[in-house]
Amino acid sequence: MRRFLTRQLHSSAPEGWTISTAGRRAASPLLTHTVSNQSHPLDGYNAFTCDASLSAAGATAPWAAAHLSAFGEETATAEWKARADDAHRHPPRLASHDRFGRRVDRVEYCAAYHELMGLALTRGCASFAWGEHAARPGAHVARGALIYLMYQLEPGVCCPLTMTFAAVPALVRAGGVAAGWLPRLCARAYDPRDVPLGEKAAATLGMSMTEKQGGSDVRANTSVATAVCTPGGGVGGGEYTLRGHKWFTSAPMSDGFLTLAQTEEGLSCFLVPRWLPDGNRNSGFTVQRLKAKLGDHSNASSEVEYNNAWGVLVGPAGRGVKTIVEMVVHTRLDCIIGSSALMRHCTQQAAHHAAHRSAFGSNLAQAPLMRAVLADLALESEAANATWLRLASSFDSPADGSGGLLRRVGTAVAKYWVCKRAPGVAHEAMECLGGNGYVEEGPMARMYRQAPLNGIWEGSGNVICLDVMRSLRVEPQAVQAFVDELEGARGAHSLYDGLLDDVRSELTVGAEDLAALEPRARLVVDKMAIALQASCLLQFGDPVIAAAYCSSRLPGLAQLQGASYGSRMADSVPRSTQDLLIDRVMPIG
Image (cartoon, rainbow, N blue to C red; front, side, top):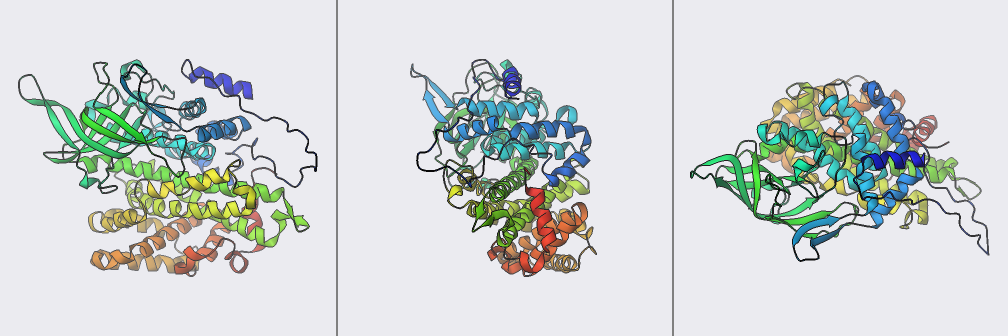
């Protein structure tokens, strides 16, 4: 298997990059004792086939099931997990100049990072829903499953994968400017060379939006774009020079960046490449420094300046926000998927540890209190997975149909809720491992630091809630599509029916008086999110698990956020259901 993985990766990796050979070494015997009662590393399983909640992905896109299974086996090997650990422990560094003093603005990554990017891109984590598979049923569900599996292996590389994936729908609407980019963004290959686009068969695209003074409020951006005059004195070709800064630009070695800047017509969207069409470096694009972040260490996030950087207009001038809306919806979907993947992996680590650990004379996984905690964590994971699978399927529907309307509001609601639940799951799972979970040598510390990120990226909690409230005013048809989705589960559970009536009432009153609703926006979106998860489980999930979710989550919604994992299970979920949940999350027998 190891030779196969290495050979496959060499076939797609650029010349000069080596494959890491990190593996296991036998430890020397200890002089004072024999190590016992410790779990072994969680590897050597198939992350796709052992995940019962992913069965919907295989059913929705049966043509992709074999590919997903093969990728699930790859991502759970000891070799690939060692590479993920290497990429995290050896973060990227900025080389602003070469040894001759020339400005190069190059970010250097360790070999393991490039190996992981090569694996992800060649397997379709960024492109599987586009190109040859775009018209196939369940393409977005299958692509979602790929990024879900990759996120469990190494979440840092998923940032450039998501941005490349989400840029495609924005560029499709851009006309001629996209001609040279789309085939390369949709290619299942990886080329990290810092060379002009024309010399590459594959490319990645980043996003460069937020500024110091505005953050998520991109309309407050101060960067300015000036149209380039033609030799005759006119303005044409959609070419501009940009001047300003960006405060968070992740994956700064991407081949180009979608960015926002002010024009005479208002905020507009531009594509700023690292290299100009004539083969020269886009010298106006400079990387100032890399961020020192809480987590996500393998992924570079930078501060950049545009000093008359060349760019080309994407979409109509003055319609920058409208141009990037569909891109934002796609990135929010991946935020949901990423947080779902992290919760799944954290819960697997906890269940695996408990299954191979004894305490106070019995196996830890058989202790009733531990089983209640593990089952509760597994239930949170099941609900998150059911939600993203349903939303991903809506991306396979026409944008102007009911599925397209559902994803506008549904993705925002789920992004708010699922990403906010991830840190709590990571914390509780870490507690299950005790001190072993708190050390840097294991995976839990890395996942714990990673957990808050998706709740911040593409809109933190308040931003998302205000976006949902805005939809009540400007997109009532999208809100109605969301309610219609919830209505599909009416009658399946009495507690759910009561919550659904409550949600309908909240949205009806809110549409009439948004100002009065805004201070309560979080509570309203909480209800919408829990109703959405219950609806997804009731309509598309295991009925036993759906009933457990309704009985444990729907009563006392106001107290839900403060309840610790495990405390809801004894009185609301039968022992047999707890057993089912734990069995479904246990990766290895």
